[in-house]
Length: 202
Image 1 (cartoon, one colour):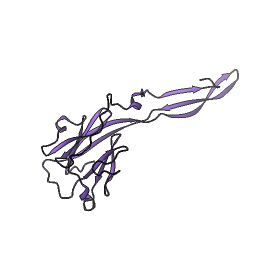
Image 2: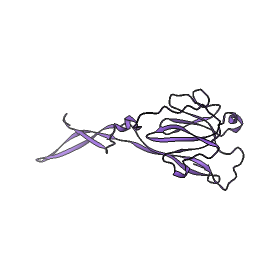
Image 3: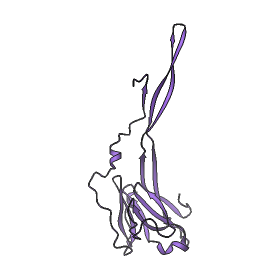
Image 4: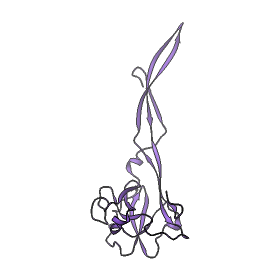
């Protein structure tokens, strides 16, 4: 989370990630009274688990009434989509000792706090915002230009870069709508399902 003495969190993106179904076979014993004795047998059944996780992403905005100390805050070293080069370096991955952080399903952002070693690779950036960001935060200030980072499950994600910093930034290829991932659209995300079998009969 953000250092509350210097920064305040601004919502960027929230998504629910659904995982592949997990099928677990279990056994239970069923007993029935038969005259003067009890007869028991095992029943096998499959439990299908539909797992999901809710992920929220924020960026840390400097508080208006705070002077940010030197070498405080994160440095930006570019970003890239899965299987593509970092357009800020022309190479795969992050520069220097920048560390990769996932943002959404397809974006990797390069972040570093090592000013002595990575300052030379730092790219001046103002902020990120998306269709889920509060409306008043969905613009760049006068000295920064807006660039599309990616489309995350039908939601545009942008970042604000200082003017003339990177004039040859390649925008992602526009995809035909709808933008929802195919594997998500194909799943109905129904509730847990229990399937029981007894003596080969389901």
